[in-house]
Amino acid sequence: MATHRSKLDLILGTITDGVLVVDSQGVVLYANQAAEKLLARSPIVGQSLAIPVNPDKNSYQDINLIRPNGLAWAEMRSTPLEWDGQPGYVIALRDITERKHIELERQKFVSLADNSMEFIGMSDMNFIPFYINEAGMRLVGLDSLEQAVRTPVQEFFFPEDQRFILGEFFPRVVREGHADVEIRFRHFKSGAGIWMLYNVFTIKDSTGEPVGFATVSRDISASKQVKAALREANQRKDEFLAMLAHELRNPLTPINNAAHILDRLNLEDPRLSWATEIIKRQVKHLTHLVDDLLDVSRIARGKISLKKERIDLVEVIKAVLETARGFILAKQQHLDVCLPEQPILLEGDSVRLSQVLLNLLDNASKYSLEKGQIEVNAQRLGAEVEIRVRDNGTGISPELLPTIFDLFQQGMRTLDRSQGGLGIGLTLVKQLVELHGGQVTASSPGAGLGSTFSIRLPTIVKATTVPVSETPTPSPNAGMRVLVVDDDSDVRMSTALLLELNGYEVKMADSGEQAITLIDAFHPDVVLLDIGMPGENGYQVAQCIRRLPNGGDLLLIALSGYGRAEDLARSQEAGFDHHLVKPLNLHTLCNLLEPKITNKLN
Image (cartoon, rainbow, N blue to C red; front, side):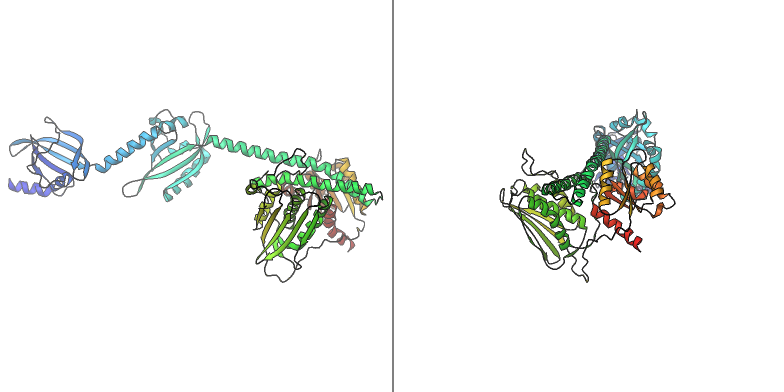
């Protein structure tokens, strides 16, 4: 018997499960090493254990074990056995503490998931679900967990998205342990799309190897609809602003042309000269407001772009001051200017920088009384240049100063709106200065004490040459022939008369069809073509002109009330050489015609 007991000890000592033999009172008659380790007792033979066993047949149950280091769980199997002539039981114990902890955690997870309103699910590595919470099943139109576990993960998505989910998304989850994406779930009953923030992570075993996937996903359909509505509203707003600008620019064009025609007629009545200057000044103001309307849309979308080149900032400032003198002198204000004698070179967009300075000067004049003082000075500070515009006007209150550059922000409004403006100018100033790598600040001692706006811009430190932008003087027109095409008779006739007074030979057409006929008979060098015409629009007419035998030689210039970036791009695609925005700037047009005149003379 002793030999058999030694063999038994040898056999049972090699296994990891605990093996006990107890008598009918629960006193231990035999225990292997694994049992002593599991029960944390040594020696254990002769001790009494309160282990529940079935006296009649085999039993299987999970039991709690109280050990010095805390509770543990064991899977117990027992069966009746006669040991050394005494009735008893053989008991096998397997440590399942880790599994029990996992099950308890899973039960907590399932309890939380069942009370969650988000889509929560788990699947194995073959994308077969084994759990989806109630809210998740309701969301996608599944009736039961049994139905869910028969539905592979890929079928929760539309066919056009399944390749991405299996071929790209889940491999990223495996590589990185987690990934999320905005994607549509498919409702199994209605077939409708449900936008979800699909958030997936791997489930790992005790060794760190992935054994499945889990998701906690949120329905974002409502926010998607709101965003889509906002995008649509924003697009409608942009389209409305573009149409509004077009409708405002069209009447501005003949008014502006008429003012310049009056200038060219050299009529001597001083009252006529005074009225002409008023018209030109107010047209510039209205044009400025229209441009601001469109710029606010560009600001909101971050669509403002620069055409940078090497420029002399001093020359830019001088040109702006010449423009500003009109509205400054109209209020009998004194302008004090201090500029360096040497050029200040920088990489910038001269048009946009001119817009910045003109806005600041316009504000300085607008918010200063008649005979007020405005100062402009520029100085180099190391690798930067500082431009200051100072006035002794109404100043800026401490409450307004922190938000002075915000969109639609203005000082105290009055019923007469004598100070005008849309509250866009300073926001545009800030955006444009920052796009140039600079910064702008505002300061004021307080209301009624004037204000100072300071701009700092990076300069080009090393430069061997000084490029100075000079306005080209138009050459003699050399019999230049211009065809003006516009369905608006006021625009058409005033533009034609203005060009004739400047020495050009001009013909007019009120439609694309008439323009094509006149090109064949008149042989123009230049076609000034409106875009928004009834029937064939300007883009279509331009394409027809380019297909004519000599159509490729014509200088084709769009003259339109539409001036968005997409309008300019569409003009280029249609075959236009240039795109001018109404009202017509004669000086700009002459500059565009200059190369054509030079070629004709040669």
